[in-house]
Length: 142
Image (cartoon, rainbow, N blue to C red; front, side):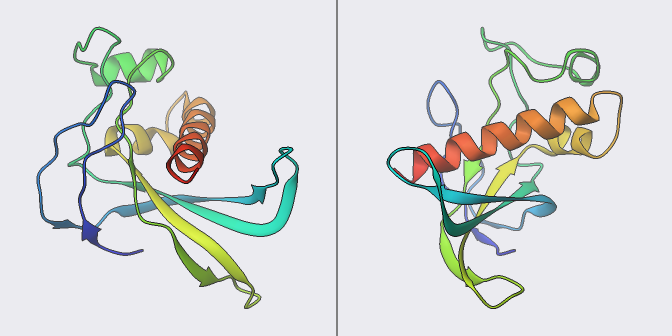
């Protein structure tokens, strides 16, 4: 994982303000996927998406921009919320077999990623965070 200069965050309704500077995200889990062909079928080219946490990333908000409490997250998950996401730069690396792969970091608020590792909605958060991460990486790299 790398520290990098923070740029505006991706959010469904435009960039989200965040403090400037060099920040180091905390690793949470890794998604292994593959690049897709034009028809959507997978290639052999591996892509690793490092899902990370950073307190500087904003908390999710309601569709109307309202604050989302911890209790709301614990009771309802993140469906129908605006979830700020930062997609870092893409780089080439080698996997454990020495094969070339593509890697990127996707950073969420720790209030979201903490729920990927514990809590009664753990599976919901893991799936939704993985789906959002892959969606934003794909959109960011088209």
